[in-house]
Image 1: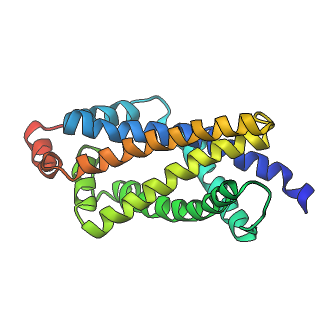
Image 2 (image 1 turned 180 degrees about the horizontal axis):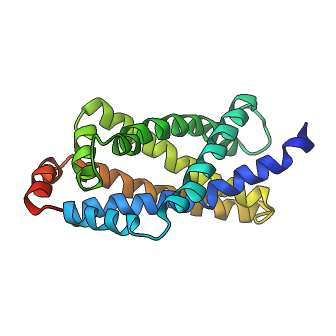
Length: 221
């Protein structure tokens, strides 16, 4: 059984860093443009992304298919895992357990978030130009805003701790010292990316995005 799962586990680990980790960072920076540049900055970022050539195929092969495999196989591993494995130190055992728990939370949240955004775009219930306003409507609900905070922290921890696991499983960090250094770096990545997302959520709740639809209508963008 272990031999049969070796390659899927390696692929699962790799996809979590490349390309999905890079996509998470890009998504954090795009959303952060709402905090730094307001409605205009966010719309400029969206326009840039969707002006890329072959964007449909880029999203299909760099985002959606990797997410599908990583998410589904990750759920399989989460429900097959013994959380009390005792393979590492006490803190690493907690990190192992949190990796599985946050993976499940992230998978559920991504499915919900895609339905709330991309599927609504496909159905014509909103447009790319009104996406900031749409996000404002979503996170203005205090309960939903709290769920987004929890999901953002779960996703960013899962990504950062996943980098640590990737470096170990691929034989890049072998000794205890290298693994300790990489753990500190990965937790720094967790803090930075989480802050970018949290600041963007604060921005989307702001008055500027409440009036975004009116701005779109007035400017014709």
